[in-house]
Length: 143
Image (cartoon, rainbow, N blue to C red; front, side):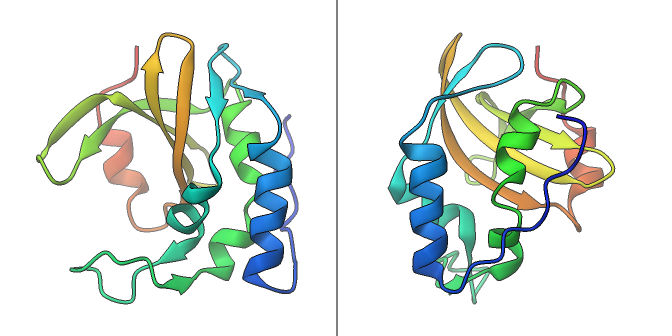
């Protein structure tokens, strides 16, 4: 699990969604520290679309850059070298200990989970943190 996966290059957003469902939703994934992560097909849009209007946050534009890195989700979650931080709730403007943010260096790829209990979580989103990696690394560490 030391080598960053290659980009996944498929033809259409539908192809990526099918790939996501087969790879993540239909299989069990356990993090390097034993948390079972559940993936749902309705999270595909949240993870692989971006908003054309950051104020509305409507996730209406497919992001090929996010989709290329679809295999990086597993890479980060299974990587014991990932930095783990407590998530930020941007609506409530406070840290949320139910959210775990994993970021890997030097790639600055982020995977966010919502922790349901000690050993279960729901996948929320994943992205390349080109602009926010420094801020993420300032967040409190996950315990």
